[in-house]
Each structure stands twice: as C-alpha cells, then as structure tokens.
Length: 523
Image 1 (spheres, rainbow, N blue to C red):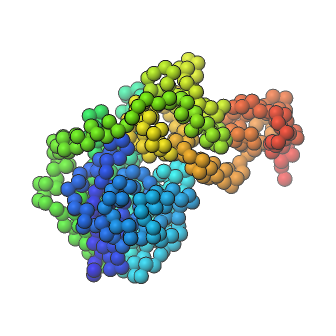
Image 2: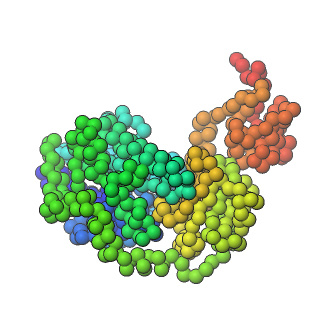
C-alpha cells in the first residue's frame, strides 16, 4: 500500500493499513458497563471480516469501551501480534492471553519500535489514576504518514508529544467518559454548575492537546457513548444542553472552528481516511443525509437504536443476578484481606465507604480505618466518606463474576447514586481501592503510592517540630490526623502515639517517627 489508510470503526476504533502491515486499534462493539454504554454513532452494521485479520493488534488500556474481549475472541485472528504498552503490571497481557493471543511485541515507554518498515511508539502511563491502573497512546509511522492515536490518554508533557511529530493526523478524546457529576445527589443548582464546568473543561483540555500537537488533521473520537437503557437515556445530549457532559463530535468541531482551528474532520463508522505526504482524503459511507442523521436527528436516531437493542437489554438485565447472596459476608471475605494489605489506600480514605442497596442488614459498610466489612447501621451511627446507592443485583453480579475492577464496571455504568458529605471533597483513594480488588492489584497500587512518597520524602512543621508527613503505622497523613500535646504526637486515625523528642512509638515497639525540633533541623 502506497498510502496509509485508516478505517474508522466507531468510538476510537481504527483499522490502520500501512506499507509495513496493518494495525487494529481499540475495536469496541459490545455494549459496556452492564449495558449502559453503546458506541455512538452505532457501528453494528460494519462487517468484521474486513478488519479481523490484522498483522498487529493494539489495545490502549483495559476500559471496556477500548478492550472488548467478547468481540476480540469471536472475530480477531489470534495470530495477530499484540503491541504491548510498557505497563508495570501484567493485567492487559493476561486478559489478552486468556482469549487466545500468544504473540506480543513488548515496547518501552516513548521508544520507537521498528517492525520491518513500520515504526510504532507507545507511551505508557502507569499511576493508579491512569485508566484502569494503566493507559497508553500510540504513534504509527510508515514513512508515508505519521499518526498520533491519543485515545483517552492525557500526557502532561507537550514537548514530548511534539518531539514525536510532526503528525499528519491526531485522534483525540473530547467528550465525557465519567459519572461525575451526573451520578451524584448534589443540589440541582450545584449539579448543573459542575456539569457546565465539566463540559467546558473537558473540551478545553482536548483543544489544548490539538494546539500542542498541531497535527495537519484532527479526528475527535472516543466519545460520547450512547445511552439506550430507559433508566439512562436522558443522559444523551440531544439538544446541546450546556450542562450535559456528553457533547458529540459536531460540538467539538465547532469549538475548534470558533478558535480558528479548521483542521478538524468528522468521521463515522466506515469512514476511510487516506493519508500520503501531507495529503488527506476522507471517504464516508452512505450519503450526506445518512451521515448527518445521528447528529441532526439524534432523538429519533437514538430511539431507533434503542428499539433495535431492546431485547438485548432485557437479557442483559436478567444476567445481573442468579439468586440472592449474603452481600456483607461475601464482601467481608473478599475485601478484608485486601484492606489489611492496603495501609496507604486505607489511610487515604480514612473512613467508611457504604454500598446502600436499600435493605437494612444488607447495606454494606467498608471500614477503611478498622479494615473490616460489616452491615451498615445508618448515617447517624456510622457516617461515611462515600456512599453509593446501588441495585443489589449489580453487587451480586460483581460477586458472582469476581470482578476485580468496579470502576471499570459498576461506576462507569452510571447505574448508581453517589453521595459525598462535602461535594467539593474528591477522594482519589476511594476509587483507587475499587480498581484494585485482588491481592496483586492492591499490592501494585500500594507500591505506586509508597514509591511516590519515598521520592517526595515529605515533612511538615507544626508547634516547633519538623515531622515526617505519613504515620509509620498505617500511612495516615499526619497533616490531617496528627495532634500534638506536650511533646507527644497522636495519630487520631488509629490513636497511635509517638514521642517527638526521640521518635519512639509509645503504642508499639516496631515503629519509629522521624521528627526534630525545628531549630535542630537548621543547617
């Protein structure tokens, strides 16, 4: 092939044909997150045979709108070589091996790999906050064109992106991919204000990436999903509501044009992009009216889409539970060993997380101070840091399937109501815990946090003392929980005490706190 050809498969899926081989990127066809998310515009009319035998497969990360194991298992030739991001944990490779892929090209962060005339460079992002414990982007270069497929990744270094260019095309996320603030019980005025800010901020971030990268052509992708379930269909942005966090491609393209950026291109499933020596030709399926319908007649389009998938949605709901389970007992057996392995995560939460299924005795309190799971006694007796009101059948499904990442299932489904005592207080450790519901996952998270703290080696000053920030017992943040009285620091989270003059632990013999008088710390 003399030119690079990219066929858009929907959401952020592309089949890239190059002179050095073909790459299938992030194909998503199966509705995700308990049947909440569907590709928009719909892609169920595409014929998989046209792109099911790639030379290479690239899955950017494990979010289910990027990693579609059911479709991959059924349609993609397992002889494809997988381009594997340099993640610090093997979760993506393990999932791909489980559905039959055996050949892997291991990459290093930001280092080009030569594949017999095709060059690929993958940037891997590996903090607990990056996707489901990892996210990535890819640069594909065959000599005729260079493409940056950014998908959901949010790199913070514009210089690094520029160094990988110049680019003929950039594929970038612009729309909502989160449950905040739409799933929360915030007061209506506050919720509207936060949603307006979210809509503006997420598109402004995408615009900054477009300006940083300065690609010749920009293809906004990776959103929004379509919500077809009766309980969720109101989440679709059918009338350009400024308080809706799911604007579609046409809204972002208009924002770019208003900013003087005329390089944006609309693609729909089946659109073909040919790139060669700076030239770009886009060929769309169907006529202009058909292509525009998802955006100009969205309400009718979504209603037709919903009708076509209504029987599937009935089956999906029926699959959530196969009988009542003892939620408290089973979650205690599962979670308590994890809590005992997670001192930094637990200290970061420093309170109760509640799963409210609307049944006293079955409502679950996850106590991240005492590392135990018990039946929740209610607001008055057991205040919470975070609470989710959720259909017990979804919790039963998570138990039955032993789902180790509830963010990549329950929370992204938007099928819950969230509560925070203080709407402004986002606690990243809550959702990090729910991403890490296995011994291996929680060990990875704890290691990431520990390494971050060791590198920072943080201290703070109070009452004439210079004190290490995190409690040696369970890593509580002593700027929040440390109380000093007569030279003794008490960590109010677990009530461990330390003599500041010596650092000796008064509660146990096997802990030591680094502390000095401020005057003794001066050079």
